[in-house]
Image (cartoon, rainbow, N blue to C red):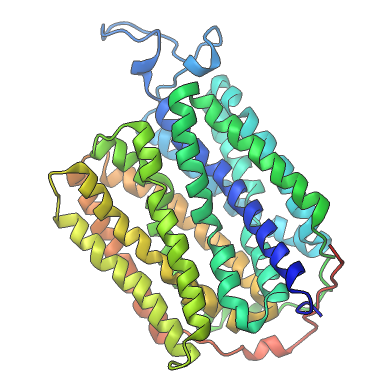
Length: 441
């Protein structure tokens, strides 16, 4: 039985969380490096003469001194290209997951992510079209995180510990940013933007080796997936609608909060790197607290707890986004701290739609989470264009419009979720064989 050895189960939890976190950190490191990559004023070739034309990305320059003058549209494609790749890779890699299991697949993902991150500076020097293709390929190999996460939760967590497993594994995004932004900011300010990517590639390589050596989980036994019943399940649609709301706001934390600090608040790059990690650190604490409390809150039914935590995350974040949109303190650090509050509120979501998806879908949660991954990609891709469109100059006033859009989306998506969500196993979870063969670690 999967629940006979606590040490094995928690080792699986830790190593999987580290892998997911560092692989996602590689993707996020590019956004931090992009700020320095496009800052042509720091190039040795820069001149105040507006008529001067220079090849800032010349191969004759040292790698750390190369700069790239991207337009707003090009920058949006570099940000959104990753999500195009993730979207295109969800179903192919999900099929590979069913065929080969998470051990082989995540090992291959780790090797690919490590190599792609390491060569990114050289691809950037080759030209914009090559870099866009590189970002799409990088996204493609990252596209299978959610289904693997679903397998680990469904097969390795006891029912009394599901909140804890959800908090850890869904917290990989926050952990990735806690690792990535301070590391990138510190190394980038001292050693140049390529070092930001090289350091992340090294860490990914280390956890990939650890996963390949220590983790074993055999391929799942095939069972028929009731696709029609899944796609016509209203509670599952409630989860997917909430997923959209969650990730369109998460895009700000992942990609644009760092840029918001630098451009709108004029905070230096290194300080911004550390400040942008704070919301993710708070989210991790909130996630663990929400998971712990959700498992032990006996006064409310599971359904009431699910609605409560999701509303706390979504309605709470929406309220504070409205506050941030209209309240602009003179002190830029206070303004930065105020903008962190709605991001921190999202940390209550493990007790909400994330928990609902696993409770309703059970052994079919990898399929449900594969669709969640698609929604995540579409949402993050569209968000890559939404923020540059609403805040092209990156001013505080322009970001106020962004915050109001976030608040409206959170309010509407959570209302839909609260009305239609469920925590009862769907009828179609009783069909077929849900077993996974496990090997010892």
